[in-house]
Length: 120
Image (cartoon, rainbow, N blue to C red):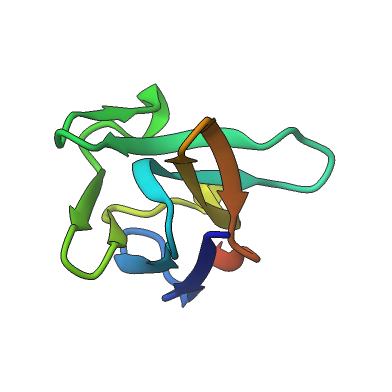
């Protein structure tokens, strides 16, 4: 089992910054990729940013140039640095890990989510 613990959400004014952290406890699993998703009431969860094992990253168009995803491999922690935050970025942000072990490949695990509110 992979367990994910997020931190760093909160209230910030428009134009401000926040950094989200997600620490993974991976047990016997290998974590192949980690990502951040977000969801607002009544909407489906959407990908914000993803980082693969080799360091390749991908971003949703709506965060390019403002958000940066990074990973600390030694501690299996992924970060999401969010700059120039706008009210439309308000959402619950959830950490995701794709993991594998033996014949189990591409198993998805989720954190509990952390609220980010951008408001003056």
